[in-house]
Amino acid sequence: MNTAFESIKQGLTEAIDFAQGKTSKAVVHEFSPIDVKAIREKIGMSQSEFASAFGISLGTLRHWERGDRKPRGPALVLLNVVAKEPRVDLKLCQ
Image 1 (cartoon, rainbow, N blue to C red):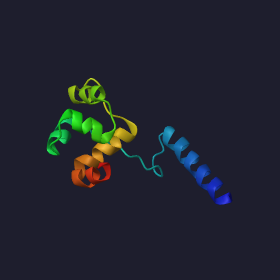
Image 2: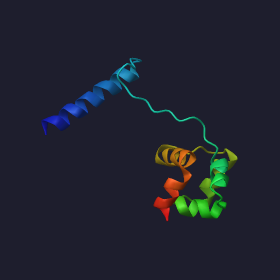
Image 3: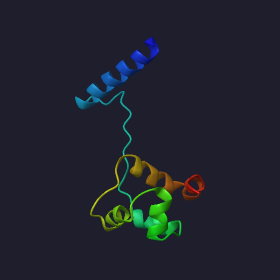
Image 4: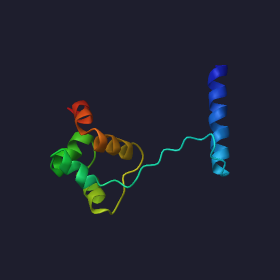
């Protein structure tokens, strides 16, 4: 239990430092803007197929493709993985 506490404490300390502009220890993952339509077309799926394969609504996919909304959180991470390795991720979804 002590190890878990120390790990959480370290994470919180790093988060506070980062919030105060001290970024030396914090690891920050930033994703560049993503072209969802290009990713979908690259793997050769229709909007319906893509939405179904990745568990998102067709409406959400259309908003992303139009640029009305941007994917966030786990969806953004998944799309970045698909953009880099489209076949690896598709194997998991089938």
